[in-house]
Image 1: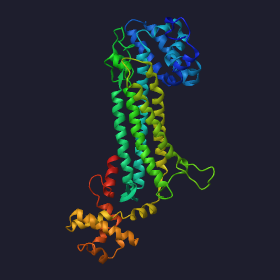
Image 2: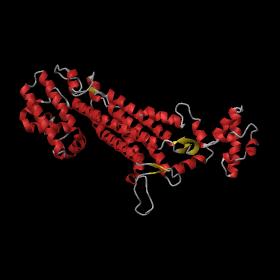
Image 3: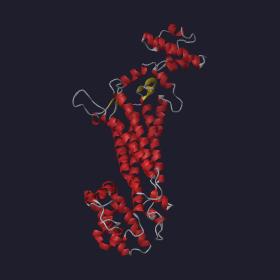
Image 4: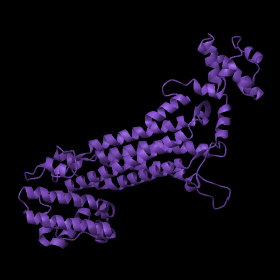
Length: 453
């Protein structure tokens, strides 16, 4: 039986029921709906709607229902209820009779679903914070394990300057720390309780909404009933935070896919996170990383979906907002499993140090060092830049690295070059000079690791 049937003289069509019912999606809020209902029972008892005995009977029945749905979650969708609120109320009435009909006094499904969803977001947000922390720990562990492996750094996907592999890991640590900060900010903003604001104008009963909010674990109650029932900023913000974090995950996945390629051969991925080809027996495909990259698109899609749904809604509640949950649930599921998978990928990753070092020594990655050397000898940087460009052209023509040129050959480009130039052209020298804060010298990488640990 629908919660709103008294106004209607005809039954809803089967098609409308299929179109309108949200239970196939919002069944995931069952625990939050029951917890919120227990708090509401206490609140309306405090203003004389229920006796203490009635309140205890309702709370006991709700606790029983919670235990039952945890044991048999399939019973929720099998009920055929319109939504999770209808399921809980109908189940309660089945247990305690007409007393169950009293529970909704002063409450609307509008403030009820807003409360349920915020409780769910708080719980899932905390779980995501733990997963982000675990991924950060996996990156730090990999950085420490492969601290002094040397690889080429890239700009425009062309070898630029050598960097420590640990420095590459720490770049993503910075990104995921920003994701943690954003999610913490979001959780702080959404930590306000909608319950007690009714359908849109507030409840008619003089309850203490501060105490109600505290009983549900919120920092405070919301302050405007119109805004409360129509607010889905927290859904938008969680989807946005997830989209940014997934972008970081996708970038890391793309780096690792390239590093794992036969052309680079910088890393080897563990068998646990790769798959083979049904046709080509030699293949070992980076499927876990490709799926992370692919799932980023669906998270972006959900963000655009909720933004578009909310963009022109008048105050207060509109049924359009029923579309808020399916995308959010998918976002949080996708984000969670991608964070877990990324941590698993990193835990079994091995760096092929010979290949990374060889690649770092190619591509004239020490050209900048030669320019800096010339500047130290008194040559203006722009002139030094031009001279080194000419050296590189000649090196390419001769198919040999700069450090293999004889001194006389280098002096033909710039007379200030002396024997000490070769000390500046080694990989170790290239790294060691990057001593400023944030640089890739091993000293700086070790310091950054110590600070993050």
